Image (cartoon, rainbow, N blue to C red):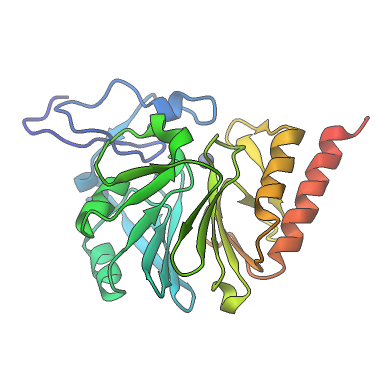
Length: 276
Ligand SMILES: [Zn+2]
Ligand SMILES: [Zn+2]
């Protein structure tokens, strides 16, 4: 298939948008990586225009000043992203592929965006489109994962080191594990001032909503090492938080989340190190 105009194709399996081209790219490196998979029918592509015709974004109020967005029917990995309204401007935590007029309207009426922070490559999606619409706001992602950026843009600002401080009590914390640069966001004002962690699948909220887990690959069931899990726990231990917003819609641990992370990490390490 060859298009008369250049298009930023979107991978159907992971939702990543690519640099513009007249025909679909030959492969998606994110999906060919052992942490993801190419679908059983082979590599498939779509475009943002097609997505707008077939899908909608669902908006959910999570707590005062925070709402989430996910795509219905499910698209890509089923990601969700969250808008966090801070005193220093709105932060978009993670991103989803569908970006339409309703998204623009909702975010505009909330006051626009001041920054986009992305946990890891499974959420790169159409981050450049979102940035451009809201005044080329910076897209912060960890430099260790930079090679997975499929659509380069001047707004993409890789950061290095272990933490990145943003205004209004927001800290991005590199945990590693799932990806070398896999990060979570801590918002001290979240959960009514008790603190909230936005974890993507660096710290995966489990369906029982009473535990979390940690994997190198979720779809391919590849666990993490003792050292990696210990490091994730150590990275978030200094922060006070009561709530975790996980990777997907409704995957939120409303309270007691700090205890949940510690207990879940200890359970994981017990299984890793058990003699039998
Ligand atoms: Zn892909
Ligand atoms: Zn992931």
